[in-house]
Length: 444
Image 1 (cartoon, rainbow, N blue to C red):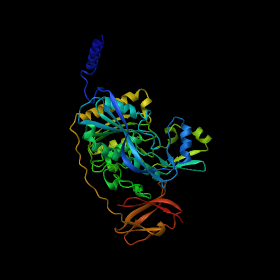
Image 2: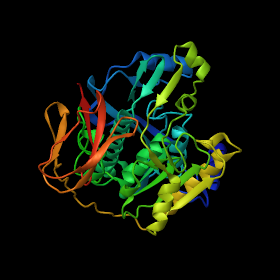
Image 3: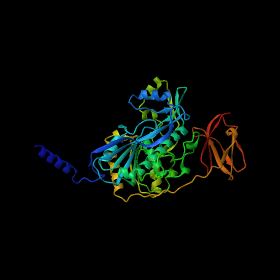
Image 4: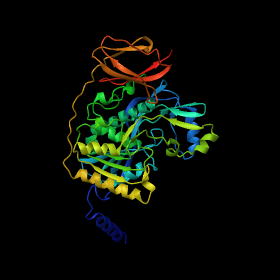
């Protein structure tokens, strides 16, 4: 009887997989290796704000909200990934998908069920991919003054930049371990949700030091794009799926032909479908209502996030450049519309079909050009009370406050000194044509 049972079980297994196709159908059981270190001694914010504990308690869902006091307290950490592989698979050149969760860069995790990271990784590995859930640095500096919780746009930009560094390090690590993991180096794809989608698109399109936001090199300097982790490997993926994402500057899209799938709801008020400042509804995004905030002594939240260019803009640029890509835009749908009218299934079907299609094409072997940054020609005077330029003539300049308002502008030539005596104490951004924006403070 035992022999007969074994034969029947084998027959059922064979029939279940008969006609199944790798990358298209579920074929395998899945194995998971948790907490694989992909980068060590990564500098990260360390002094959590009391606001972090308050917001975490208000949410009451077991999800930590990472808000920090300042960027002056730092500590080294290791970054981890969970690697999902098809059990018993002997293929040596498999496609890999790195999955990045969402959470407004202040919450979420690599094993987040709500963000469907585990769902995607398990489903992809069962289809024959190597799927990798990536941890990236979370946390935004925030202040509470006069019952207003404030997040500064420039500090938020620095948070995003840390995530960009981490994803690049994760891609390099996976490429460096391609032989051990049975991965094709030229078939490494990204799948990002919300904040993770922003990181996915930035990874595909940001390939020059000149495209790095200037605030990344303010004090404390966050370092170059590839400062952490394994070196000597291409840090950019070969394709990306962006679920309700965007880019900080459409000009970074350049001429790359890496395939992308853009998924977005046109009524998204968290990461706007077109253009705008994201996370204006941060409390709702994190699952906290305003009545609860007021009971905790917070009357309002001021989120001064930088402008983000959503999927509509990315799609428009790619169309103008005649770059092949795919879109799935749904009218009147909000952010993360998984739970709306069965769209969770529809979105996953689109994602799986796109990734399957990539595996049926020749592998991408894009070679990155090495770019060097030109030294800045802007020179700040003592106490940041003025500036000059080392070269150039009649260059337009503008000074903006942290809300993006222009408080001073004009033109400057080599040898001229432009003073800031009329400006009040505070932090500003100086933009000079042809130069990287420069953040400076006045303490007068």
